[in-house]
Image (tube, rainbow, N blue to C red):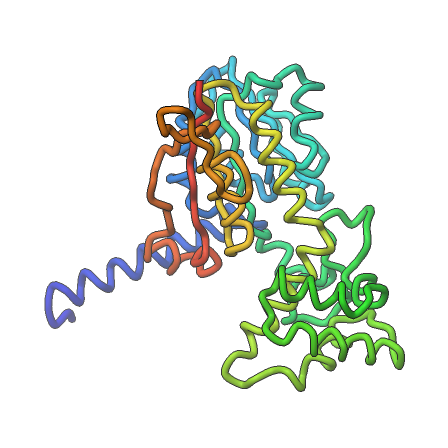
Length: 328
C-alpha cells in the first residue's frame, strides 16, 4: 500500500493531526487556546499560587491552569462578554470577574490579592466565537449588524462610529489602528455615503468599500478596516495600557507576566513595556548603565506557534508570546 516509509510516516502524521483537530474542536468549541503549553510553562505555576487569566473567553487556558493548581491555589478569570459566562467552570478555586481587564487592579484589591499574584496571563486575540457569530459583526464574511462590541451591554457600536465620527477622526483610526494607506480617502467616502444612508449592516460598509478593494488584497484590506473599527469600538489600546500598568501593582516580586499578541500595534506596546516599563520603549539607566525596568525578560526571543499548531489552528499564525518576571 505504501511506496516507502516516508509516505507511511506522512500519512500517519496526517491522521493523528486530523484526529487531534477534531478533539480540539469538540473540547474548545468556543475558542482554541493558542500557544497553550508554552504559556503554561511561562507562568511557572505553583500549586498553591494565585493566578489571573485576564482574557477568560472560552476558558481553555483557565482550565489547564486549574489542572495544575492545588487546594490552596486560586485563579481569577476576567471577561466583559456575557457569552463567556457559559464557560465558567464549577470549581471552588476559580472566581469569575465580570469586567474589562482594564480594571484589574480595582478587583484584585477588592479580593485582597493586590501585590500577591504569582502569574498573569493575557491572550489578546479575539475569540473564534466572536468571528464566527455573525450577529456580533466582527467578521466581513457574514451578514449582520455593525456591532463589534465585546461588551454588548454597553458602549458604542461600529455603526455609531461610522455615523458620528468626523472625517479627521475616521481617517486617524483607520491609519493608526488598521494601517490603511488610503485612510483619508476612505474616511471622506464614508462621510459622504452616510448622508445618503446611515450605516447599520455589514453589507452597508462592504458596499462603500468595494471601489477600494483590489482583487489580490481583498481580505487583507477588509481585515485592516474591520480591525481598526473593532479596536476603536472597544478602546482596546487604552485598555491594554491600563491593564499592563496595573500588573506592576498586582504581581508579587518574581511573579510572571505572560502575554500573547496578534498584531503589531499591541505587540509594540507589550514589547516596550516589558523591556523598559513604559510604552515608548525608552529605557532609563542607573548610574552604572543598568536598564531600570520593573521586569526581567524570561526569554529574549519572542515565542511563535509551531508549524504543527498553525496547521491545526490557522488563526494562531500571527500570535507572539512574550514572558517576563516582576523584579524583586
